[in-house]
Image (tube, rainbow, N blue to C red):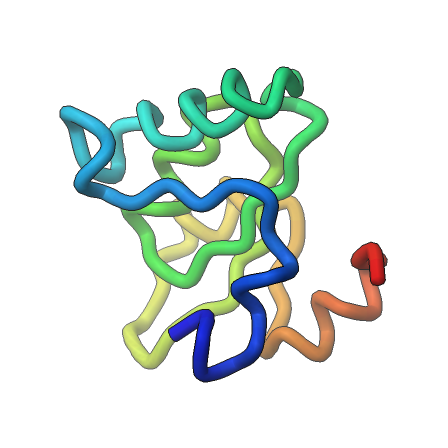
Length: 99
């Protein structure tokens, strides 16, 4: 996925579900990335499209930008997000990425 979108080189660190003991909604993967990057969870931004991801990031203490997928998202999940965007173009307008 990252390769097809030419995004792979924009990330210094990539962790996958195979690198943690517990999957989402457990916050382990989010905490592991923050610790690896020596960054406080509150200083991270997570972009998620699924309820388990939103829950996990929220439990890790990270602000979440929700881009709902095709599935209906409950009000409870929407409340966990700091903002909701329709697509990545809207996210791009909220945050700036290093070139």
